[in-house]
Length: 190
Length: 190
DNA sequence: AGAATTATTCCTCTATAGTGGAATATAGCA
DNA sequence: TGCTATATTCCACTATAGAGGAATAATTCT
Image (cartoon, rainbow over all chains, first blue to last red; front, side, top):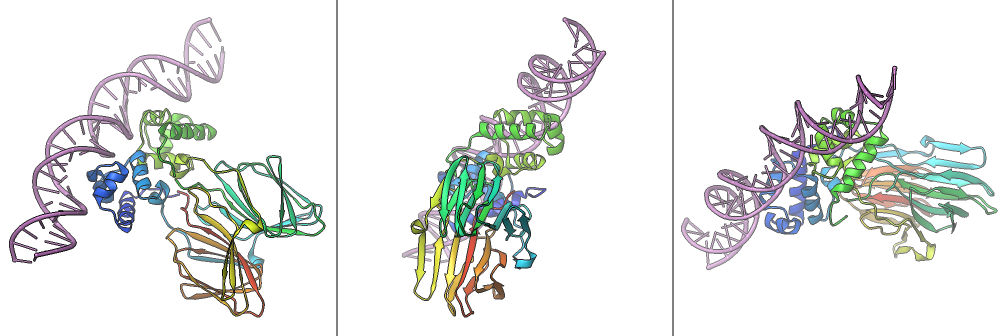
């Protein structure tokens, strides 16, 4: 989330992407249904496109508004040693460990959860519409309930589900269960 | 990625979010430095905002252009049983298993890689600027080299790194190494 | 219910987005 | 080098975004 939108930089991104795709302004004009003049003006940061026009440009470049507008200010590397990770221990028998650092403007988490046999880790969500979760079972058997629908997942199985559902994680088995969960609360590409 | 931008729907999203935040048009006008008339027109889908104005509105609503413009058309659930997953077996002694389904407009992958002792899985990337990778070591010891910088990661450790670096994965240990990798080639929130 | 206050839409006007064609700049070829 | 073709920027014009204030609608209070 930036305070100020850099119109010139957006123009640079459009031009870079256009050249990378090997398009002339005329090519892009035809694909995007935007005049050559306007494209030139946008690339030089001379005019501010409406979201309609920028959407057309992005689509023609097989990109997205978000990507053309984005501002990169992320760190290059962050190591989280095991003992530096945030751990949530629940007395009822499950543990959640956050494996990803907090990055400015990024709403994403990678985590590893373990659930003891016979333990119900409780209900989560729904998160905001558009959020996505990806889960991979490392060991044991996980019972995952999404909006009342039951999924039984074994070691090695994986599942994607929309984050705006109610989700319950349970270990109905006889041995500990562990899984990795990647949760993206951000937006889809447009 | 939608073919056509729905201006009325964007307006609905702005209004819903504004009401959720408990703002009047006047409140939002002051916060966003956009006239009350323009806000009303945008909400009613009557006018097309420039990206400058929409950015101001999004910022004032503590949201992003991407989120105001996005179109949700993702599946709710997709299970990938172990034997349905795409597996890349390399003869030199490493294996990569894709754990996430392909979703329209989403450039994200969750994968699990195993590397035999003494094996170098090779060099990857650099991916596009803004992409992010999150890696968690499940077992063994992983040697990860990012743009020439060496990181030694043990079971339980995790690391985030920008995707536009050259990355090399190696198992210098005496036992197999496995790790989970979440790779987001998409954009950051704006 | 009526009055006062607040919120939203309508209206007019100015500034600029966006277009099509001309002028200029650049690249490729003989 | 000069010529041709292609790419880009300039220019004049139309359409509309965006602002400020008036009119209308909705809500709150007595």
